[in-house]
Image (cartoon, rainbow over the protein chains, first blue to last red):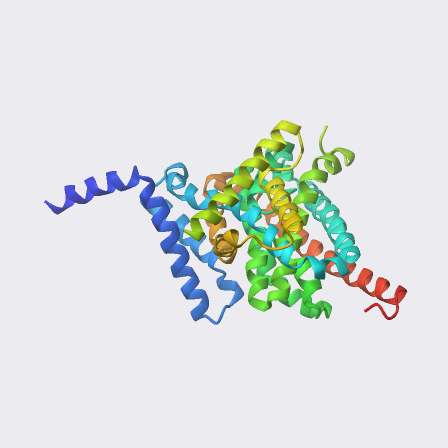
Length: 243
Length: 122
């Protein structure tokens, strides 16, 4: 008699947003614990392990992403207010920012241009479809903003969201190594480059290095999201990618 | 209660941002506009509004959790990834390294340039 009961329970769970929300939080908290236990090894970034575990779970239980997202959307939704909340570290670091506004502006403007062009150019060179190229263009922009930009320029917002996450992970994993190789020691420089490239995931990583690196990373993430949303459609049409 | 007040305030700013970009036809996403509006409010008031602190630090300290549902979205694009894994993978890796390195270099160069031009201001 146990078998049919379990099936009934599963039928209920798979149709309810409760499951998607709960497994997201459980997967993340386990992933976070694993990450801490491994001495904050960047390869075990909690986003990587929890996303992998959740994808495996969906595949094994034959659950569709739509059903999963019914629950997970409550977590996803918080990206909006989190973007608004970036105004606070931005304000708190404003005095420091005023002293370095010129290098920061120069770095971010160059970063946006290089980030957009390098992704479209490399993808095009390697024969990616136009849709994929356009979905890659805002890959360094924090998810809610990146998705909005992708939609605006004709990419696939959901593909962009996933590529944004992968870009964030790559930056968070290689960042410290890259800065070491380049001989960059200034935490404000590292923070700006990290936030510009790897948005929130990079910022989460930067806060582990130092509060200063985290604040500059958050700042770069917020300002570059702003610059990308204003300039990306325009840059792409100049480059002839968009008609 | 502070957490709820703070959350409410953040949502009000996001809502105001979403409405104003649509009303004015601005090319900026709503949450970014909301962030700009909150930033301007803080500048005008000259201090962080106490009510938003707990909610925003709760959100920002678990920022990476918020990306998980979007990351799981990779599952929908498995067939595209299967066909285009090489260009997508190479682009993500190379472009991320290039962007990060160039951004860091430009910031370092311009910092050194401005420091040299204004001796004693450092």
